[in-house]
Image (cartoon, rainbow, N blue to C red; front, side, top):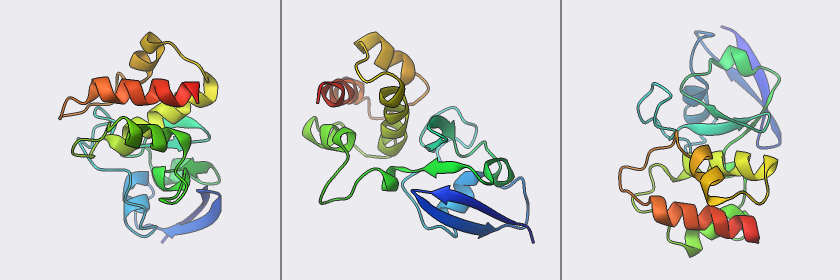
Length: 153
């Protein structure tokens, strides 16, 4: 059984998998018990599984565990804590941007990748960065406000 090692939320982690093509999402949610990234469509089209791989927004349902060996992975759990949320998480709370919450971690991670590259984006740039993340509840206006709030803070 192959073993893969990578840095997850600033901690070196190892995962044993039966199949090297197993999606990263399954390793995160399974043996690593990081359930923030969600399985939505399983086709990389909804964005609910978005994590950062070397600071790039990445669909964890589409990337094999073998492809991220030795790389840096950040999940929503690695951003902040309930006591001290990341500024982006705090902005989502302040703007009540999570309705059902299923898309929230993917939205936050896509927004985090944008804000790392572009700390003060325009609304159009935020919309473009989040275009691949779907919200079935339609909370897009509040999500946009949250990202804009975080970019000003």
